[in-house]
Amino acid sequence: MNLSKLLATLFLSNLLVFSVQASEEVKSPNGRYFIDINIESGRPYLVIKNKSIKGELPLQKIRLGLTFQNAQSDEWKLTDRSGVAKHKDDYQMITGKRSHCINEANVRSYTFQSDKNIMNVEVRAYNDGVAFRYVDKDSTPKITGENTAFLIKEGMTRWQQIYDGFGYENFYEKCTDGKALKNRNRIANQWGYPMLLKSDSGIYTLITESNIRRGDCASLLNNKEALDEYKVERGDVRYNKLMPASSPWRVLIIGSLSDIVESTLVTDLAEPSQAKDTDWIKPGAASWVYWAYNHGSKDFKIVKEFIDLAAKMKWPYVLIDWEWDVMQNGGNVEKAVKYAQSLGVKPMLWYNSLTSWKGQGAPGTNRDISDKAYREKEFAWLSSLGVAGVKIDFFKEDGSDIMNYYQDLMECAARNHLLINFHGATVPRGWNRTYPNLMSAEAVYGAEYYNNDTILTRRAAWHNSVLPFTRNVVGSMDYTPGTFTDTQHPHSTSDGHELALSFLFESALQHMPDRPSAYASLPQEVQALLSETPTAWDDTKLLGGEPGESVVMARRKGDTWYIAGINGKDTPQKIAIDLTPLKLKRGDISIYKDKDSEKGLEVIKIAKLHKQYSVNCIERGGFVMKISE
Figure 1 (tube, rainbow, N blue to C red):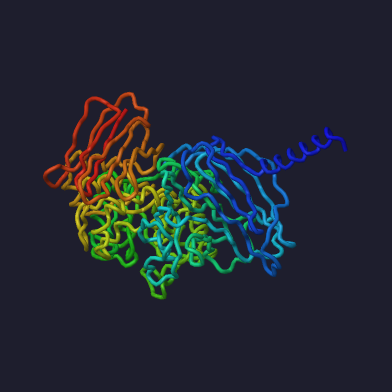
Figure 2: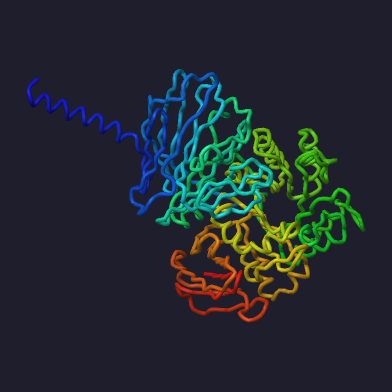
């Protein structure tokens, strides 16, 4: 072979190698980062690299893998890959942080082989993150487990919640390592979604999952084997195979804090709704009897007071909580429902999801909605009675049977035009897109805990300033905000802080928990503000903050922006408000804030719109700014 032919051969060979390597990557549409596939010692890894973001990403490497029945080897080879396809989605939401959602992604599928076992992975690169899932094209031999692991360096700042297996009701503790925390008798080193990471360069990544379908289960994270490897642990040991045809999406939202908070990636990845008739689905605020009395709805006269409160405050709903089936002192549940309807208030009723919980009988167990035949009959009865929705409580674990049960409940409720709210339940995973009658879920250490312990008294302000960056990112959160008075245990947050929470925390059903007398004692202008509280939003913008320190959130309904800010510290601080992202040209401005030198709220009117403001927040204080264009 002469020199020219040799050089040509080497050139083509190098070009071929370069082409194969370059073709592995998938760029995000905006070019901010790209995804690559590496295989190290037979193990495949998904690698995320920067393109235009300055600084180190908090999470750059994810181990991929499945286990199969009777597998002879755990070494994988990349055998095939698809071309890069374009994915674009444009949809409307009834609930949530944004009514009109648009997203696009670049998509590629990879096929790996180990002996006779085949593993298919679909990867999507979005402008605000990365998602991947395993696709099961052949159910034999059976898939018996998942080896996905998020590799997080020791020393990386993170906010992570201990997995409790029931209600996701723990703090998102800030730490820099994966050491186990006190776990309420649960298995050590188990963590629930979402988890927030922060690199030294100030880039964030939030880890969660989306789109759990029938036959599959939810998952959690476990770093017991190695502190820097957070493995995906399925919530159901009865794995057998991926159903239906694919795993849930493993989701990484990446970027600044505003990228994290404003992202709709969890619903972007969920199955679209098939509902044809949704006109009856109306988000709104509700009065709620339980918090003020640490008791249910056994007393008809007290229930009536909260119906009157909803009517006075122009809130569309009242939640009649547990014990409604043994209501007395002047009336029963049918009478309470009719009274509410006579005032234009729509009632909702509480149910227990199971006939027992933690081995103990629970109120309402004589109404067993876990039985399909009974559930169909009961929900039809509620619809005929004029009940608007149900709050269903006390779910256990995250196995496939419970995931199926959630979907059974949402579908049965929809057939009977009932809104639904899950309590003592799993965190949202995009179902509010698939099932638009799903209004909210608890899955949070919320204001209810003022009835149980003094821990919120000590940590509420800090905790409240972490939730907008963690739990509330992934879906509606029924925290029950706005507790101006005390219940069984006192609270240390200010009136301004509590007022702000109703606008800061997104929940399509926003339960107002305090006594009628508490709202009556507020200034008339504050009462008017609470009366108009929107609970589903056209847009959401994060204007500032840092988990555990402060938050400034702007949410828009129609032509009005509501800006809520809270101080998460035990010392006063000046909180800056930059309105530039809202692109306002004019507006009438009112600021509802704590008085500087005495308890209570004041309202300040501002005649001229500026781009920059600041509010002096007292310790654990807060404010709401309303701007009507």
